[in-house]
Length: 548
Image 1 (cartoon, rainbow, N blue to C red):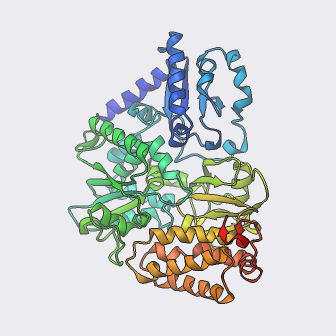
Image 2 (image 1 turned 135 degrees about the vertical axis):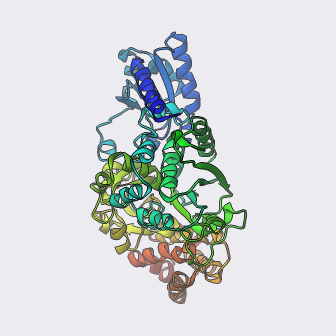
């Protein structure tokens, strides 16, 4: 495919879609599929077929539409009506071209002017729910691969990097390292072989941002990686994706084959002199492989364990060659940055945290699902306006950053959600998991849960993490059983500092964060478990000797 052919494909597919009477979008992300979305889509398709309208009505599977709590979701009436909790019995009404036939669905129609939608700014998720992830032409009609074409024809590699630096984009995997600076470091390495790695080893409990992007808009990630390859001088890319993400893997494989067939990946992309290949590497579910050096070891076929740094991957990474590693969301931001310019992206967010952030809302919140908001949006806005608040009970805390993050109490609900603000109150942005807890949650047990996760996922290479997480978990377990002392509380704090200062990698260094943040803001609950043998939340059945 040449650039002229890319433009023609975009024009032809856009004209074809505009000639239709309607496109009906059925969410076929993993969450909706688990609720029967595939059967629903087939039922709607059969109804359209029985009416002889297949040439005028197209039923499309799409990625996540966001409001997962209302799945399966269907978008109809040319994208102006969204229905939730749809069943195959609703197929005749949805397939009908008569709005009157859809009146029985009125009680399940979702208000698109509700804060859940109006207070979001969708950049990464712009196509999710709007394009068929298994059709390349759908992505091209939405402007896909135009940014890659612009980079190859209008910008030199240093100019691409400059746009990314101007954007202020920071790595969305959790650490928040400036993306443009990382790209520049790799580009300056003198080596005939360089690699691009997409970290899709999303392992935080309650997190599903990267999975949803890969399921709903895989070509955007491929395009971002190809632009990165051009910018830093790499010819080979790898996507390291969790083995549990079967649907994401399937759609990535389809997207890669489609892009290669049309010369949007592979050799001589868009008939230019640039070639870039992308292959998948499937992880076995080790949380520690989200750490970049452990991920590199796993791709190389070795045991997934971190190594001492320096050297850092931009200097010596995959097979000892310069390697650029970014996560899914970071690469998904690249095409719109190249399309609209770094200054446009930098105009969104805060002075130090630019752009938007995708969050997975989970736990005790009304609108569980996937959202994207400008950096600096207040936590209260995210949870109560967009998230719809707490269904029952009263808000107690929100966990950001997963096992590496911290619990944020009610007093900080007006904190802007950006890298620096979260760090000041003892939490981190992380990859974007946001778990909400109400007053029925025991914060000691929450800390125990995350410590158990870190204990199980420790690779065991360094003693502080291998032994320290076990000791900390045992103390927390005994606290929830009413079998701990004041000395245990002191030891818990001492071990937290030890792990943070002496562990080899980020898993061990951040494992104490949930403990330290709950001790900081909910110390009275720890003391009640120890001094009164009582769980204030009524969660830990101390008198029975077993946790609830």
